[in-house]
Each structure stands twice: as C-alpha cells, then as structure tokens.
Length: 252
Image (cartoon, rainbow, N blue to C red; front, side, top):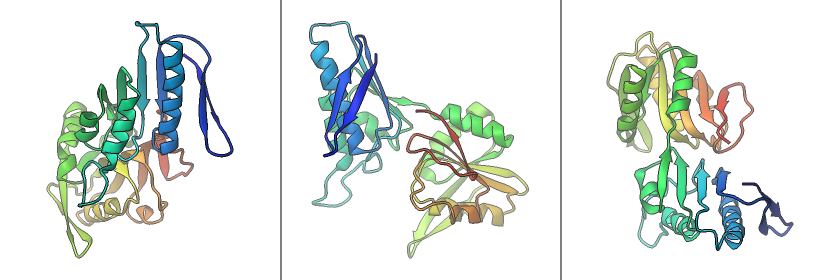
C-alpha cells in the first residue's frame, strides 16, 4: 500500500493514503519526527479502513529512538522508552517489527512487537572478512554473540570492561594472537569503548580488528576509531554514511 508524507515549513507532518490495502510502514524511527509521521500515516489509513475488518497494519522500525533509555536511570527523571512505547501503542498496529533492539525491554513495552534479526548482516560481514574470531564487547552482549558464533561455526572470544576513574579497563578471555577479530554489538554512538577494546586486542597480538554494529550513529566521526580499528561494518538503519572506512548494508 502506497502513501505519501508532506512536511510543512512550520514542521507539521501530514500523510495521504494513495491506494487501498494492508498498511506496511518501513521507517528508520530514529527521531520524534519519524514517530509523528508514523502516527499521521496510521490515522489516515484508519480513516479509510474503519469498516474493513480484514485489513492489517504492520510497522517496521529499523532504529528505534530512545531504545537505550530502557529504565528510569535516576529519581525524578523520565522513563523515555516507556513514553515512546506508549506513543507507538496508541497507534494500535497489528504488528510492530524492530531491528536489533538494544534490550528486550523494547519488545516488552511495545504491543505486538517482534525482533528483526541482525544475523544476515553479521553473516555478510563475517564472510567479507574471511572467518574472523568473534568478540563480544561486554557481558551483556555475550549471549547474543554466542548464538551468532554457533550459527556461523565461528570461534568466540568474550571480553569484559569495568570503568576505573571513567576509563574502561578491558579483559579478554581467549587467544587472539595473529587472528583477525570482529567485534559485534548493536549500536555505536561515539565508539570510544570499541577503540579501547580494539587496542587491547591488538596488544594481545590480534592481526586486525573489525567492528560490526547494526545501528551506526558515530556522532563524533571516525578519527578515534581509525586509531585502532581497521574497518567498520553497519547497516544504514540510523543514517547513510559515505566514508571508505565504513561498509553499510541497506535495510531501508
């Protein structure tokens, strides 16, 4: 089903349904503007399908805004992901798909939600490099990375970090000497933690260190990452990146 979005100069967003049928919205979803665009599309579709009991509406979000704010971090602060989830729930989609959510909290808060797997993009990265050792960047990412390693029949090296005076101290639990390594995670904002991890891997003898993240924000550029990481792989779920240092897989 086709639709169009119009944005006025004052910031207002409007939607128009161009043909009848099931609704299937694919959107980055990484801004509040995107959320209002989704709401406008759904409202217009609902108006056209109020009497159609068989029509269904699916929403695919490729980079959910606020997904790292999955708890109330401090007293008197807003629980941002809950606010966002409540807004999405108010639209009453029959199905909501989210690409590689930061934590299961997103799926728990959003009604009718399911996870879109990032495995195909990790597999493409793995094959492009040539069977590297997978590295989980912290304890929280270990389970997911272990599942990927089993599917790829790849070696896995866990790592962990603790912060001492604000600086991450890295421990690596495995042999990486003379091996290519691939760090796998969900999201990179600035990427400094990955820089430190790559440095630790190379100090233990890693030949090259690559980084895969599904959601590549890289809000501070690549200068620091280039000091220790050989190449970055990510999807275009957050934005399009034009840099030879980055290989992007198209999801939207």
